[in-house]
Image: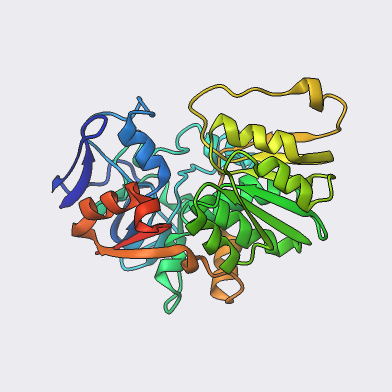
Length: 344
């Protein structure tokens, strides 16, 4: 089969690799019909995730068709169309019983990380019964592939952790795919105002089209502008969806007393927590790695037409064009790219 293989920082190849085989009785082999590229894949290619070994097939998102199942798989059979979760869970360990699938003792984020992933013609899925979701015919497949990672992440780590309530004023810092997923799913809770901030005017235009009430260009004065928009009060919920010190500090500077900072971004360096200002402000700060506990609900929302994740898809490629797709996604600002979808 063909697959996208990582060979160290800055090195990737689309090449022939052995088709995966069943290793455990709870494994499934899935023929990938759609996948996508995540910002985390770019972090891997930059060398930011050193535990990813040379020769690893990348990718942790996708949908496909079950090709083969182990003897212990009960919920799926050959020919089933499935959504592949970015988080693998055995469903039985202490963390899984708490709903913290991301910390599963035998799983977690392993696809494209510690085992071969989904940017390939076939992928092996451990613990298939609790790591795959059956999907119905006729549902938009571009929407479904967004449910592997980006929408559960934006929803769980941003919206749910941020405890958005009807009437809240929300600021989402970062109008990339994760921030926009948080924007779309925040509507489940009817905030009165949603302010999007980003350095990219094109992405802010997309945010406006997707329902942001206000947009702010992050050019060094975003804090002042957001405070002006809120009459000096600040925001009830600030969602950090980038993962750099400046965006975290922006959230700290705009949060209202009693507010909630929900951190989603993947940080590669320390940030300052300004307790000299925040110690008396009754704020809550949360962090989280996506657990995908909300995937079934999000699937129902897509199937009912309530949620439209496909609106984030800007570019489509054939799977064997993945090298070109990486070039496009790596230059998202110039290419005006949000999410790219690769179809087999």
